[in-house]
Length: 275
Image 1 (cartoon, rainbow, N blue to C red):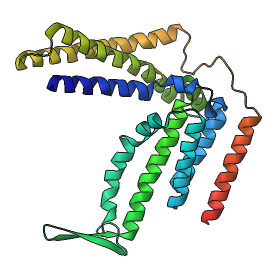
Image 2: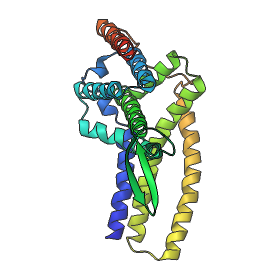
Image 3: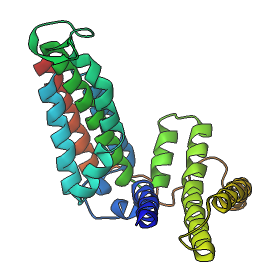
Image 4: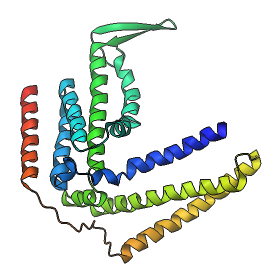
């Protein structure tokens, strides 16, 4: 039972990484965001994220979050798939970071209620609750926009857009190589695990298990280093020079300009309403 649990957890983590990092099928769907020009889409999402980070209103951030959910829906993204990938890890981690801000020690102000623990009184303040909620919503909304942009845009198109917006070549080149290498690396881990299981089974002594794990770590390091060199040389042999190559050139249409104008109007309206 324990081995089965470890196996399911290990394979589940690898499958989750594959679905999260390499969900190219979503970018090929015939949805709203997939039909937009990648340059316009990236620019508007960047404006949304900046607005989220600068806004001091919970209602505005909530409105932008629901707008992101609406965009995911009209882009034919499964909401269960989307929510799992936007609320795990970073937003939950930010929730733990925001917890100290609830108490009067860090955020003084009007008291909402107090907690008694081991003769110590913890006072939760209204400004602390507001700050914590706003912080978590900002993180969740920003992550949601970033994830939605990444899963509705082809990887090589997104890299080319980054270069158009002035991101240094070294960063896009590293991202491109890492994207290809991580996929191969996950495949190596899966194959290594299945090879060990097929040869030693589910039951193994402690010392032999240590020896197998240590040997495979060393072997994996050497194979990873060699694979990294092979991937880079293969990219160079196919004409890669650090610049992402896209066969279809970007072409902004009327729909893209209308979307850009709509986003600018929304941002101007939100800024005016907050002031």
